[in-house]
Image (cartoon, rainbow, N blue to C red):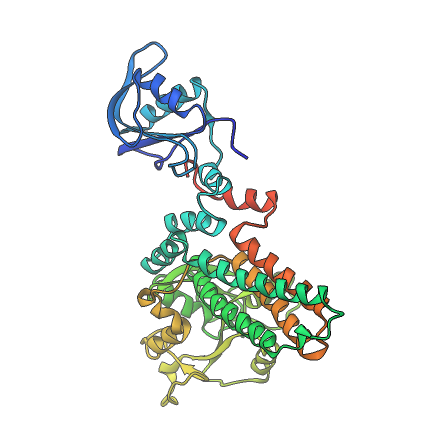
Length: 444
């Protein structure tokens, strides 16, 4: 539904700069722009103008651009005003725009209007925010691919195939009394298999994009005094955590944001995992396990001088379903150490031995993102929706092979289609939209 009000906001970051921009969008945008400049504005032209206050005194002079609906970012009439980037000037200009009939825009409201007016879908809208907040070149490249619609195109193509399958099955149900059994057609199973394979590829790309967006979460776990805090300090490049010879120094989770080989990482140093009657240490251990279970990768630190103990084995047993790696610390204190492998790494934070192998292990294939021209930017909600769609498709395929119950297959396909529609915003709630756009910049 077209908006009936006109919004305005400062579209450049706070502070002093060479240029500041005020953006206006809505049915009154042209009228406001012409009143502000005391002149007519022509579409698709950059025009030099003076901007006046209510007493016809100049506020500043600069450039004015008018974009006529629907040929604008929001799909509405849009006026953009470029003046000198002084905070006082921009506030005066914005105040005058609001006096002429606009209201202050909410965070992300310009992008929200672009979505509601069909200029972009939800993945493209989110890619705008991700592009602005990119923490690496790889993330920026992935975000621009999503903004250009590469992610949306893959989702739409898969969804269209699922819709065709639904139509085929529901048509077969309508002719259930005919002698020909359409649901016995082997190509139906092949098409379901193909959809699952396609979705698996999209999911892998989306998971890569999520890591670029959020950062790879790495938890450092192990017994007290195993070298977790020393490893955190080495990777962070400064003394982020206290290191002493006293076991149990770390009582809470210590978090650091770093970048390795172009991949953003969230390193979480956790409390030593041991039984304790001390209430503070018990709470630290509880928080440690909470962080460990949420992590993408867990590094289990083991004191190389002591070797694996029964307590270490208990920790490993509890991690059997997690993505974890054994890391033997204090390699410099050994007279000799086994060669490093994916099963066990020997490192020294004092000499740096084994650290390059560890960094390669952590980043793995993700370190190639800077050269990968296929990775798209994605968020956790995209990954969750793709997983739910995959589960529905897998269930549909299982039903096909076991009972060929057309009604049940059609229902699973309907749910898969709905999960995919959640990604692009074709099926969404106001609460979801509010949560997404509220995290955008004001003026975007």
